[in-house]
Image (cartoon, rainbow, N blue to C red; front, top):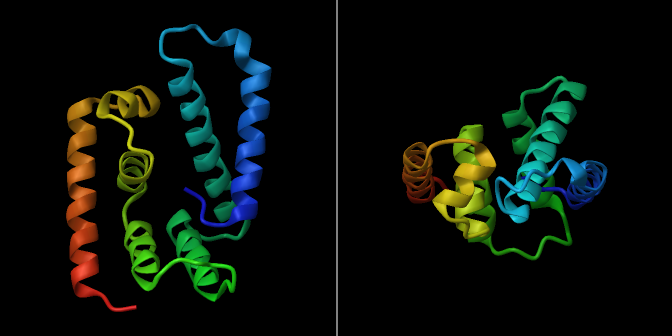
Length: 144
């Protein structure tokens, strides 16, 4: 969700602190994995929104800035198509970006996504379908 490794480290640290502090509140209404993933997702969204607010830009603009830095990063080992895919993902609305990342990269089921994002399976399927369609169009029509 965050493209910068340092930001990802911060989000991960905040996630584990929150899990540690709130483990007694885990009600076992869902899997522990789902509960932890939900905390991580919320921490990533909060982090992105706070950083965007601090820099006085939208979260979408912040994602675009992160992509620009990724392109210039000498340690980025991805191929041209991987960079293009990240640009396509960054162009998605936040909800579609979340659903796509979680389904495509983490291979979560719609049921797991439903528990994490508190959204219906049908809504998630629709969001994922729209995200795939937009990414496909982006990859077919854009050049780097």
